[in-house]
Each structure stands twice: as C-alpha cells, then as structure tokens.
Image 1: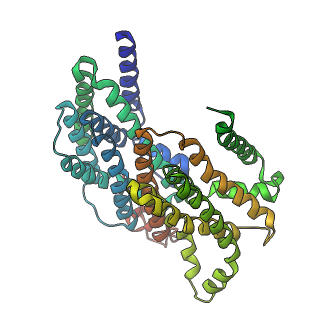
Image 2 (image 1 turned 90 degrees about the horizontal axis):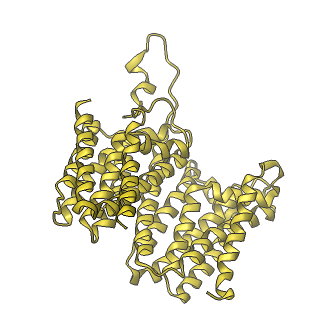
Image 3 (image 1 turned 120 degrees about the vertical axis):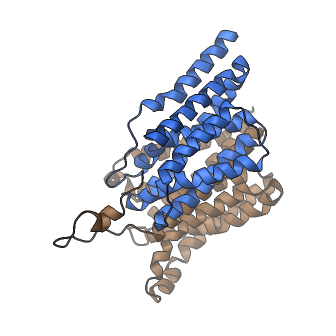
Length: 195
Length: 230
C-alpha cells in the first residue's frame, strides 16, 4: 500500500521535474500551427512551471480552488494574449513570468491558503503576462487558429497534470513532498529572475 | 448495461473510426463526401464549438438535450440554404466579407458560455446556442464547398458535424460524476479563451514585412519590431 503510494509520488515528481531539462524558451521566426502552439508552454520551463504550480496550488488548497484556478488562468491569459496581439505595451513581461513562478512556488512551499479571491487575483495578474508572451507570437504563426488551440490545450493539460501531482503529493509525508516541489519551483523562479 | 444502452456508444465509435479512416486518406481519393467531413474537422473553432455544445447538451435532461440536437440539425440546414442570400448581402458592402472569419471564434465563445452557465440556465442556453452554432457550420461548409453546390460535400460536412455533437453527448451522458461538471467548466474556459484568441488573431492579422529599403536595417525593420516576446 505504502509502496504503491511512494511509486505514484515518485512518478509524479519525475513528471514535474522532467521539463526542467528542456531547451531554453527561444521563439524565433514564424511559429508553426498546432504543434508550435502546443509545444510553446511545454518547452518553456518558465511557462511550464507556473502553469504546473497553478494546478498543484489549487489541489493543495482543495475545495473549489481545484477548478477555479485552472478555469480562471486560460480566460485571463486570453485577455493578455489579445493585448500582446494588439501590440499594447506591457513592461517587464519576462520579469512578471519569473515572479509568477517564484510566488506560486512559495505559496505551495508555505502551504498558503488565503481567502478565495486572493489566489484568483494573483492568478489573473500572472496569467496576463503569460498570455501576453503567447499572444505577441500568435499573429506571426503560420496557422494562428491551430496555434491558439494548441497552446490553450497545452496550458489546460499542464494544469490538469499539476492537479494530479498536487493530489498525489498532498498525503505522503503530510504534504512534505508537495512543499518540497513548491520550494524547487520557487528556486526556478529565482533562477529565471537572475538569468 | 444492456445491449440497447450500448448502442449509442457503439455508433459513436463506428462513426469515429469512419472519420479517422477518411482523414487518413489522401484528399484526391476521399470523394466529395469525405472532403466535406474532413473540412469540418479541420475548422478548429467550429469543430470545438460543436463538441463543446455536445458536452453542454450531455449535462441536460432528456427533452432539452433532444431539442438542442434537433435545433442544431435545423440550423445546419438553414445555414446551408441561406448561403447565397448572406453572400449577396455581403458582396453589396465592400470589406464585409472579412467578417465571415469571426463566425468560428464567435461560435466557440457562445459554446463556452453554454457550458459555463449554471445548471438551471443551461436548459435554455445550450439549445439557444445550438441555433447560431448550427447555422455557422452550415454556412461555413457551404461557403467552402469546392464543388459549388454539389450536395455530397455538404452531406459529409453535416455528418461530421453531427458526429462531433453526438460523440460527447452519447459518451458523457451516462456519466453523472461531479468531475464531469468540473471538466465541463475547464473545457468552457478553454473554448472562451480559444474564441477570444482566434478573434483577436483575425483582427490583428500579421502584416508581412515590407521589403527593406536601402539603408533600413535592424530596429527600423517592421519584422524586427514585431519579433515575438520571450
């Protein structure tokens, strides 16, 4: 019984850490279609960690937060995407994304359970930065429709992966693994801030 | 589960296999009916809107669900039938043809709202959204028919659209768990986000960079200025 839990926890941890080895997030030239959009959040460790952290944090808080955060993120991300496509100025996009990774990681590590509106507001602010980065790239895509579908679906799947990881890691060691993973995510955020 | 209860799932599976075979065939040997079916699946926004509507209808009691399906079918036929009227109206206003590109994103957003609204409003919202969704797919299929009015292309498109609506309806209807409701809300947010992004992508279409004049380099080149962030 315990062994099964540990195996599940280990698999979840490995799944969470795997993208850290991915190549740096450099988007150059004309982006592709569905594949380009789908791979954009997956191949960028900063986007990936933030979106994963949204799912883990929601699962850690439990209740309605399990679904309200993953529902709010793509909606607000789309608004940020529209701003990016329109070419509206948004200073410090990359800093905002790095801060989102740091704050979400710290929230998981500290098992922070604030009142429901606070995570939603935080997620909304962070989602604007992530959406802006995607949106700025979208009009240049070879197939914008396929690109948009690809990255929204990938974002959602990362959230779902985060929820599953959060649920799997909440019990063992009284949530210690989830807190440890949150610490690693926060360390990633510091790295993105410095780099 | 009885054999009768499994009939919808078996039909959906058979339709899915047929659609997969059609998509795997090269366009040259698909026949117009196959090209019509492949076209509907390739229109991301419209296809997602129909699938989302199917999920919304699957969460309804029997009567409004059946009404939604019938309204959708009627909408597809109306969209196909009124194509020429709409086109002639669009031709009279220069530049208005561009707006047909917003049909898919709008259908996506409406479908997302039909899924997102609370349970008590969905019985009205989902069948109501079936009207524009059906008309949209009928009109867009008729608009993109390369055979210019031959019924085979449209028949294929209508059948694929019907499958996209019925597949989630038949598969999710027997499942009453709360996580389907949560999945529905997440899907709704995806549909609205995709619709918004697609609409914006069509509004802020990428302008190809102008050929660089002598002496214009680096930061003055529009292509460089529009380089992607991150």
